[in-house]
Image (tube, rainbow, N blue to C red):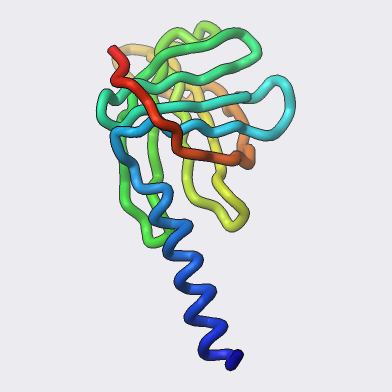
Length: 136
């Protein structure tokens, strides 16, 4: 196999992998790796905009706030209310060199303005699409 053929094969495999992360009506399920204080699981349905996250303190329901197409896949932002006393918590999942990455931050409000309050860390994740039923 020539190096040109190998490059084309690898590019084809990469495009297939990237396309597999396209948001659809199916539920996406990401197992987050890292310490026990961080998120353990993040799931969402792009059609219903329902998201769930499992943290040490419990399971929280939120919304898909934004889906943005990138060269190597999609970046998805999630917003949750009432996690560990924070006014608002945002997590983002994005394609990374080896799978996906998850980052999270918490916000508080003062005098009608939003301020960064906490970091929920940065973790690798393994994501897969699941068949789903529409959620309410």
